[in-house]
Length: 400
Image 1 (cartoon, helix red, strand yellow):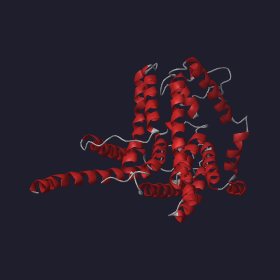
Image 2 (cartoon, one colour):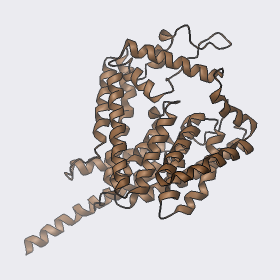
Image 3 (cartoon, rainbow, N blue to C red):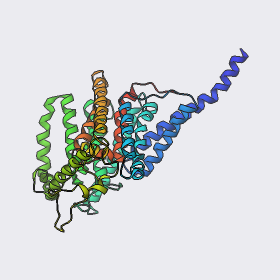
Image 4 (cartoon, rainbow, N blue to C red):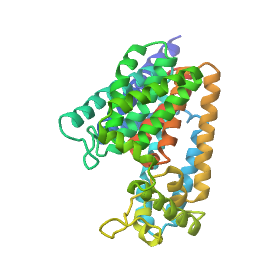
């Protein structure tokens, strides 16, 4: 009996340490999901804390590595990326760019720490922080004169594309809660107008289209009759949008618009890169350096006679194929197929709010990704990976 009591006394501190790591890891991920909408540095620090807690539990506490099934295609994609970097014209530059692959560890970390009922709380944090960020952007537009293409609302972030991409994702999160949620629906509905207005004011057409695609998916999952709301919303937007913003969104259908012509140039340059390096691409972070070398007679020439040099090809599919090769693109598509299959099965099994939220996030990212390389945007990628892992994490019981 004494031996049993001694064992309990010895095990008690270990259980306390495990519980502390559990709590710190979860809180760090909650903080990361909110902070990423304001500061990438703060979000990365919090992610580092969560990953340290996770690694300590794996190594010191001898826990088994666990991850959703769609994590393994991501790991294969990381391997293909490293191979592409190794054979790049400048391996050092390409390998340095591969540091973003560390963000893939968000998936097993969220799977480990944000289990049970925690995903609902995390999404509430995301919605609340997005509401604050949206108000900040509206103030920038209305008061601080961030009201033109040269100076757009960007919140506290470094670029309007990142800002609009994050708001686009959270619009899907909020609408999924309103349609499928059972709690905190009023708060989500209240912040939706601010989120929608803030995205429109960024002049970012891809993010607006991505948000519309997410809304369309959620309506179709709930009831096709909800599509009747879309023409009403479009009419309201046309009626109240400032002329400069309405003109910006109308330019999507103008083939003579310089930005549309520039997209066509990027398409042609990306095609040449893929044709020249179909297996491993030109290498991570090498598109901008090699852009001029693949320029053809159909390239966009500006009024100063200089072709635009773009840092990437403004398309997820094109960028991955040109930068990392067709095998990497195939693996990336495998990851998306495995993810959507998992989410659809969970939706049918009854995880309607979380699965619908994750599917809307995927659809928004892919749709906007036709016009922007948002899979390479660290802030957007961090929030994306967090949200799509929540349904799998919710199916697990919290440890500790």
